[in-house]
Figure 1 (cartoon, helix red, strand yellow):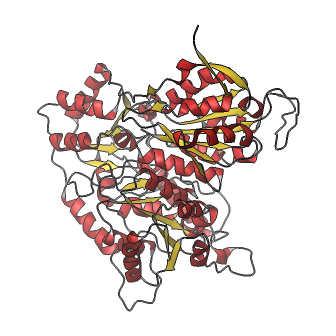
Figure 2 (cartoon, helix red, strand yellow):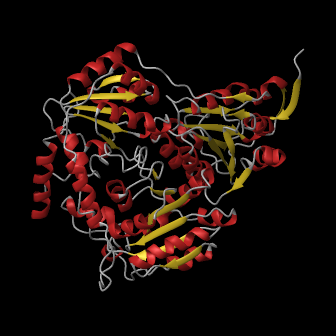
Length: 611
């Protein structure tokens, strides 16, 4: 008879998670972020306490931002490791919904173990329980169903025997990788069961490398050989596949220039002579020129988000054809692309072998050098006698001048993501942007997650005053855990980025900047005092020169540093860029709205979503 171990369901879950390993001999789920409530404190809380360092617990300040830290950790580890988050029933769980969407869009592993209603229903309705008048099986956790790759409700202790392996198989699957929600009924957490001893045997999870179909490969080889102006669009899948060197080698061997998406930026150093920067809405002038002229666009590990494609108005060549090399058939077949379903690293190797001897046509290399000169000009420091507030572009220039090879810059929403994509010159592995969901409030927690994953890196977080106000509480967690990183907080007194978009779309300045809201007293928020109150080292930079010095000085500290600098919200980057499809009202409004609509119609005429 098989040996068993009597454990509560919560104890069994934690014990099982503690022995799920990577090929490098590390736990795949490193540990669990936890805020306890009545839906998880007695069951999961007791189990976590009993596990101790075998499966560590970390306390955060908000369920959403704890999950953001976990997501950044997984992204930094290229999906090879992950973290879990537990919440109570009700608002603790729904606080995680935004983070679930973020992980889903970005194809990143996140385990959410959410307290749920009583399976036995004896005390119904319990505190914080959502009651569906027509469906007695529904709880607040059903909100996760469209936002996760795998959802399960644990209503019996033995359900763990099937749901836990399914959860990890999703999180370690390069094709279907994404968030998992286990809705764990709170009474079941405490129920005991005789679990098979073999269930807790140490298991190694391997990340597969699916090989491309030879027929799809042959089609793409033929398309590349006949192309006159091919260009590669390098996405986040290149990084997750660890195919950075293979992509560079492929481009060099076959003389094909490449551009990098937000998720793919930093796969290769900005100095690589075939790296033309970023395409699309926040793209470089030289990259967009290549894409506009390209007759063959080769996407590798990209989902062709609208910023990358200029809302599908970027690729203007009338004979343009599209290739999509991707792990998931859903992404590979988008917009009539010739699909090639397979791992980026394996597919590039196979493609290069089949293209032996092929060299792409000559193309304009001077445009890249001209672009780099332009970036240097716009990011240069203002004159020392200037009394104007610095721009976001000048802030980027200041940090760029003192950045090191081990620096990682990160951001998520507002002005800086676009400005950084078009202007930041990233060393290999030196760029981390959450722009799949562009979630305000990801920045502070995300910076902590990056530093936890790579303590050897200098992490520099760009965040605007708007995003900082949305979610800053994990700064206190980073102080408590002595996780040092640097926050450059640009204060433009509102939502400067969306204000510029509002104006561009013909709208009046309304409700974005504090000055344009229906309030009597303009807020004067002391961000230095606020950050210092949470224990961070906080100071104000009065100039670009001061900012450079303060970024350098932050490197010697063992707690987060927050550097606040006032900026001018009006200017954009002034260089690069492309049209973005944001619908303009078709009727009504003053002349400025009519002019914006005419401009919109001219740009929309170039949209090609299917060939």
